[in-house]
Length: 213
Image (cartoon, rainbow, N blue to C red):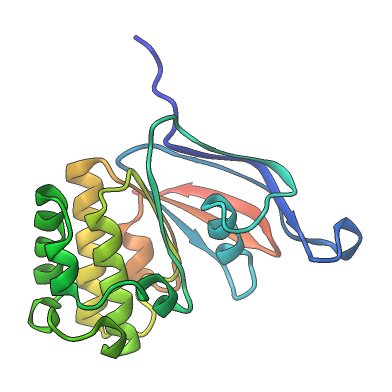
């Protein structure tokens, strides 16, 4: 049997400050792998490097050492921390987005809007939603595009407990039923509890990788 390659690999990944290596690394020698159908949470204190790891993995920031490997043929989506408005700028309303999607993607978005309690706001301009509702909308739009790998920064930022749980439950379901690979930063216990593995970062380095029970 041929061994299946990980969906996403970070191999000795580093990124320097704007001034180059003399200015120091933002992240350094970051290694971890993520299989299809698994959720990896990045944990650590503020400025540990979680956002930088996700942005490098998404190709948004240049990698100055090591390599990010996305398995051939897989599609990747990224939901950033701020500003979410940039990611939603081309969308009028969630209802209009539904009308522009192919049947399968529209069905996915329809289900996500109901699960995230956004259906009643489908005709409200997306940029008129509250910041927390925009974050939920960005997640819904991202998963509707049926990516193979989703990179998400602080998924529950600004969301009330019920809204945060809905986002986390939706992604956990997509991991389990559709084989989505999720890598997310985690700022709370609820996010860690949904994960299959936790990568602990400090000062831009991986200090521990733990498989969750």
